[in-house]
Length: 256
Length: 335
Image 1 (tube, helix red, strand yellow):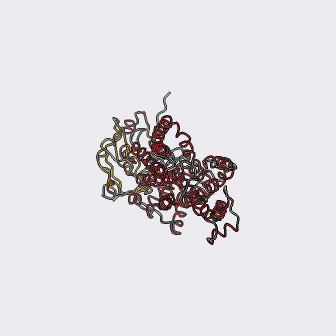
Image 2 (tube, each protein chain N blue to C red; image 1 turned 90 degrees about the vertical axis):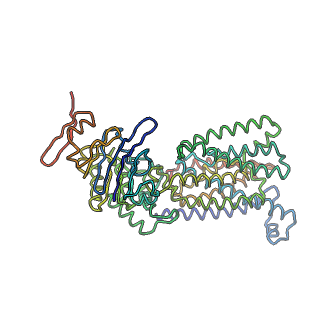
Image 3 (tube, rainbow over the protein chains, first blue to last red; image 1 turned 120 degrees about the vertical axis):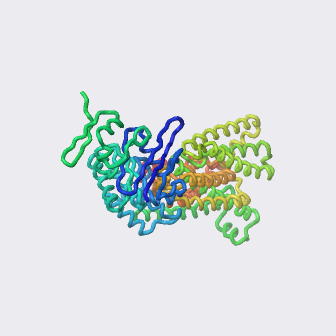
């Protein structure tokens, strides 16, 4: 069960984006970290099936993803992309209901059960009061929660999150990650999450995959992967780890 | 939600009432006026042959033709604006109009318009060339097994420019046909007849119904390819099917009426401002709204200048654009 990435390589023209990447996840929260251009988003796109790799394969529940049709794939795996434009005047409920599409025939209407489920997911994402609001007036945090609610409505066992908290203030960052964490723990989901904030990755993820220049540099439990040596080697800057009791905080060294 | 549903209901009622009123006006208004007693005589078959002919073979097919051409253009525009995620997309963006224009010009240059064969050739060649242009655009934009919106729009513009240049070349080499080509390009419903309708109506009805079955995937495709695929929509297959259906619809409409602009661009926008972006509501309303709008415009085109008919494309722009700007500024629902 879960996802297995086996020896994936992908290039665009002469640029090698991913090189021989392997990764495995069954449940819990798996953080993908690494500097800009390390290939995190591309790897997520390969896992989702949106990009076909040049070499290697992705197994979804032990089946090559290329052999699974798009609808079945969407029943098993939901994507929360980075902020994107949907400049149409849909309501929050209408957008969240789109998450039921993988379970529907193309002209099958939404049933009262679908609407009840969508409402429940909206409430779980903490935006129950916004159900009838137009999406045009949502803040960044509200938008992100709506997209998470839509992913939940898909009722898939795997969540793919691409920088879900970038551009959000600390309150919304923590709020969204707490929601995801509760869902992962409560429902036994697998969540593959691209994160830039090393402290959030360290504290919220069960395991971490650290990428560098298209390759997998280290994988394992946060304590094993997030060390001064690995981080300095990957990010090519001086980093300090501050240990206070049980907690560890990652701090870049300020120069000058 | 209830308020929105009530509003949609009122809009549907307004379209039905407006449609019936426009049909009735289309029968009564024209160069030969028809009085109510004459109309009743036509209905019970006791009117003169001339009157029967005017009603049954000129005004009735023209009114039905106007409705179906308007409906086809508006529902195609609605689908294409969704496929391209571009509010400027209309049925002619894929090079269809330039293809049809080239086909009609070829027919006018090489076949006499006065012969039955010549009239049939204009319809047939404009249809074939419109579809040919669309497939050229689609093939060019098919790169590495994928068709992106960007490459479709660009190749649409490129092929349109090439085909328009060929039309101009043919016009320059055959100056005696120039007026005829220009008039056809302005769009007119005056040459509508039952033969054209028997061919066009089934295509328009079937393709429109098929298009409506894609309303849900089309809503989802507004999220972009990556998100749409993650929500279970095969975007490449859906886009290909939608393009084939809209090309068939537009080519059919253009073949029987010439090029009528603004309907495919404007009607979906107007209705989206009122009912919102959900294609499940929008597509049927576009079909009805486009039909009623073009029927009304055709009536105006027939009566606005005494003793002379204007190309209906001029009327669609003059009536539609100010109304469109009014609704846009009122901004009840953002597009």
